[in-house]
View 1 (cartoon, rainbow, N blue to C red):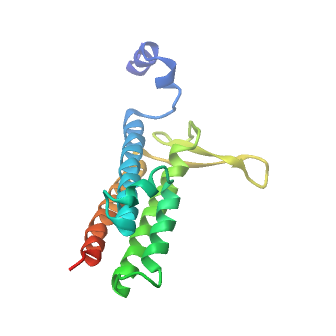
View 2 (view 1 turned 180 degrees about the vertical axis):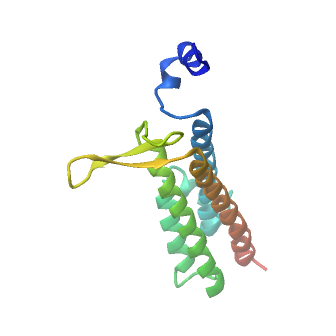
Length: 174
């Protein structure tokens, strides 16, 4: 019996039916971890724009989705009443757009059923929507590609955090 057969024999179904390697599963886990941190940071960011992280802003942002946090933050930052400089407003929009792109990519991974692929070492992530031919579309990713997605989420979280510091300084009462 080869090593893979031995591992399959002792692992429960929920571990073997993912069609993923341990590295792929770990990379998907990092996508989930950094996406959660990015969402938390977006909540702090939006709260800071409203009225400071510990003020009424945190009450208003509680329960908002990441998309709602991004949309609300953009609206506040770009409002005619915003005290942010045009340069900082531009940065806010750029940072939030980067976060949205990273989270959209996360959604296509974390909300997709997975399956085997004809390319060894990769996993197929299926869309739940049917294409024009009535079939499920699939995108195939290697563990390395998944790891890059996790790194993008982490970088987006750090960008939002850094931008939040600049926003808080700009909103500070002299």
